[in-house]
Length: 148
Image (tube, rainbow, N blue to C red):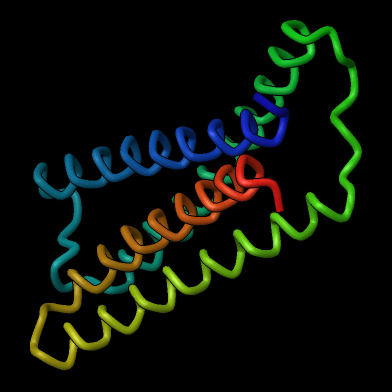
């Protein structure tokens, strides 16, 4: 398995793990009555901003740990140099990710137009953001294996 494939797998699992843990924590606070996310949109903004900050920090730590473990396991001290093929694979993965997120956004807006509660739209944004990230990394793994 190539370095890029391993890195994409780590990205998928770290995205799932960070989102699941944070969602569980927010859900538990909702159940305890610390805040009401059904009607308080200011709190949704705070929840999103905190999630972004925590997610970035934890993912940086996970990437550092991944690079250390990969360097120990493969005895290669530096990450492979990114060439034109790598750039093309990332570009196609990003394209697929945008398609997935845009589709999710449109579905969310349609749901809002059909009378879905606003708090479900926020939840849908998180879910479709996670799906878009999985599509991005999954597409990159596919394109590396396919051999663009």
